Image 1 (cartoon, helix red, strand yellow):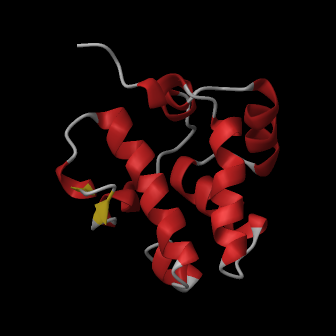
Image 2 (tube, helix red, strand yellow):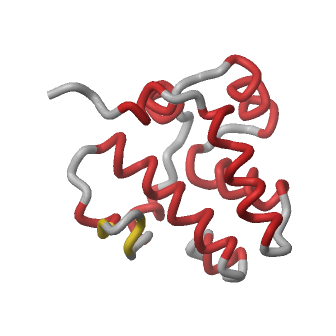
Length: 116
């Protein structure tokens, strides 16, 4: 089976959509970055480099310094699929990020989003 197209998509191509979605609802780019850093363990400088380099999603998650163990607490539906039921690891990581950005745009408090 061919890998999903999203795996080879550049994080930099999707990132502005995350920021726009958040900002439309009164949230900030800084909050989007905080979510990404929490989920992956990348520093702000590393995230900036990834966006500049055009790193794809598959590599982004494969090379993540520290995938947050609390990410398994992320539950719910994204794109019509329950996140906790996604078996393919890379797709599950991508959907975790999508779900967190959705929660941010829906006005959830950061401590709740970051499973604190």
